[in-house]
Image 1 (cartoon, one colour):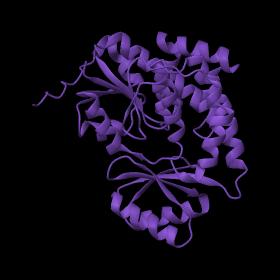
Image 2 (cartoon, helix red, strand yellow):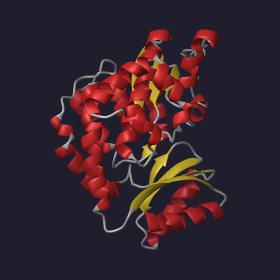
Image 3 (cartoon, rainbow, N blue to C red):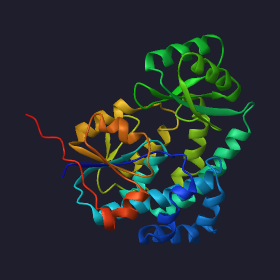
Image 4 (cartoon, rainbow, N blue to C red):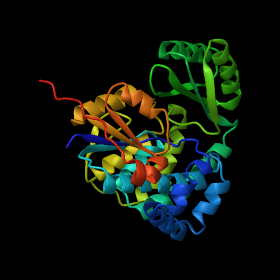
Length: 315
């Protein structure tokens, strides 16, 4: 056993990029049929028209997509998993894949959670968001955020994916100013999301989600340890998985913490399951990485798939 299975967070994904897989792949069809029954509408029809700001539809569709890819991966590739994990929303997919939470439960949890989240963010005195950008190193980002905070702007770093990819949360008005400063300092804006996450300022939302949603579900011990993207530790208890998912709302994501956890788990290569994303690049810098996308599954019968050789064990 040497593999880590990792689920990316919500990746902005055009429906056309995954349409064939979702409509024709047998694993996707199984996941979609269950989702339709649980949520009460056609997930494919809604997902086709949704964008990343239609939180419930996009999250339900993305969950079905990533879990179907994980099902396909398990059935077709010779994996020896020692750990499973995910970044942000991907951690919820990992919880389902490892059996810590049932698929049916995660679908209703998404529905109930997005209702609470929308109510929370719409009730704030000013709109909040999360701004993703790259081509600035972490020291420069920390200095810029410290400058903004000293000027009374309530912004916080939410994500350190590597030394060049970051996200900052706070009031949208402050993030608009920050976006211009990032441009002037040579950074490249990626996208601005209409809610804050992974920051201490949404502590009240974490508390509401725990009380109104998460504690009403049955959380079980995962079948393989879950890698926390909060601490880098390995989670083997269902309650610990629930707490960790909630703590992700108020704790910045640090990719170095995730990498350290993968190494500590004994993993010697990583399989990333989901639409193509930046995780392949940053993970492959430290560990042999395979990416299973809808195209990989669609082309497998004719093109096959070669797993990278795992890292050699050193004394």
